[in-house]
Image 1 (cartoon, rainbow, N blue to C red):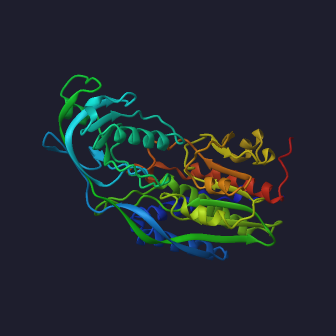
Image 2: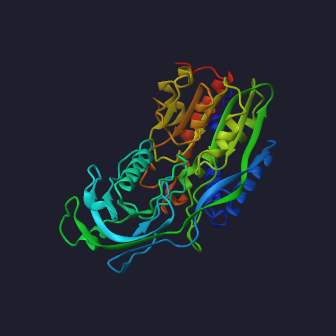
Image 3: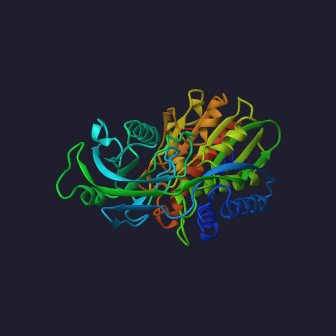
Length: 420
């Protein structure tokens, strides 16, 4: 049977990825003109493939910077996106704070000297896709409850932007992420000790919530009969800061969208198989998985859902399938790597998670999985470095083939590979 794996066009998928990262899209922040242009592009591409599209627009609340944030230490002004950045992450609040700095190291034990001051702690590069937000919110809350008026996280990345509001929790403490140079500016040379009081620091985080109209979900069914499979990817990202400074979001998640779009073309060109496959491009993932939540409430619980997020790996990097407890084991086999072009490894889906698979699991859908690759990693996601130039077109082929194989088997139209 023609499973379409060899008809996945990586070059065409790469062109779609570049279009989504074009400056006119301005980082695809929910509720902006850039997001609408991305939705228009996707709808036009699906239409050109003969696939009808329904657009479901909805209102969103987006945390945005009303103006450039500020950080100064002992009178030295630092540069946004070079020396520091605002890490919203659903917990930070807007506001201003000016006080002496206190060194907290990893903030495992908080000193009494923190009261009325700005806590400075360090975070490691590692932390994980699944645990970073929880750790951040907990650290934020504990530092606030200890009496601090602001927080600075010292880490390796200062060009990162988070607008996520997944937790819908705002403890109310202005905070920024900053480079290690801040430690010397605040505490002098030499390694500070926990509780050491340093120089005066001023924070300005002009963050505000805005109610906007998102371009919404794009819903494109392929086939006839009951819906059996939903293939989804979020097309929004974290937007722009200032004139000409935008976050392209090539891996997160133009890569996932480009792969799903090319898979849609392949499926639309094939003879109709049993049941319907729904192509779903979700909006507002970055501000609380709102598009996926909206769609998940309307689907039957017996469908198979495969979400793609950050699939632009390198070479033969493994493809990871984070699978819910009810996801059928027979949809993935170890020997599939020969046809896919990269190892495909299934691991249990851990909760809490923060991608578009979550609303489907919460709604009671049993067969849910997220397909991703680790190569980009936390060092690239949501940074200025997440650009198309990092990605080879050939890197899109393995996840594209994997998705075609998963869709065919979940739809009931493809038998497992035969041994020779």
